[in-house]
Image 1 (spheres, rainbow, N blue to C red):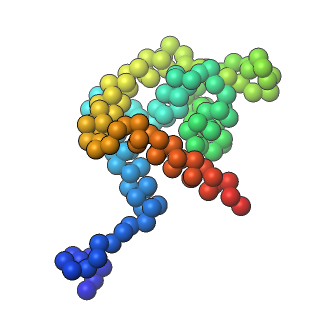
Image 2: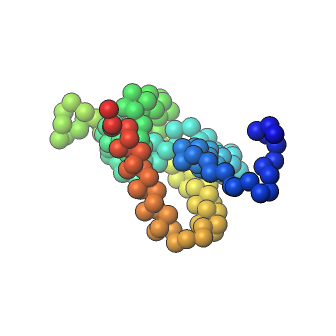
Length: 155
């Protein structure tokens, strides 16, 4: 029987790998958010960084990269794009003169807030389909994130 053929009804159920399940979840989550942003004709590029800066700024680039699980070099490129769009500004960090603090500009705040309805629809759609309390899901996601972060630091 080929791999693409339907499994026999008497065959034991196949278990897919943990990584494939995580990848599939990320892909579906991304598709849901993309769909909701498209419904409002909003650009999604760099929105996660914009949102994190809006929610937690002023914030350093290192803090932002750590929060979003992104390499510092990638986050630096993202910050430059947001600056070119005049959605984010940077100023010297008064605590550490070597780093900068990033914060939303008025245009950035407007773009960030424009995405809220799309994010709320996506979040509510997920909540409506959960069969366990949201707090349990959040706790499991945090544990999974910590496990992946630990795996990244293993040498």
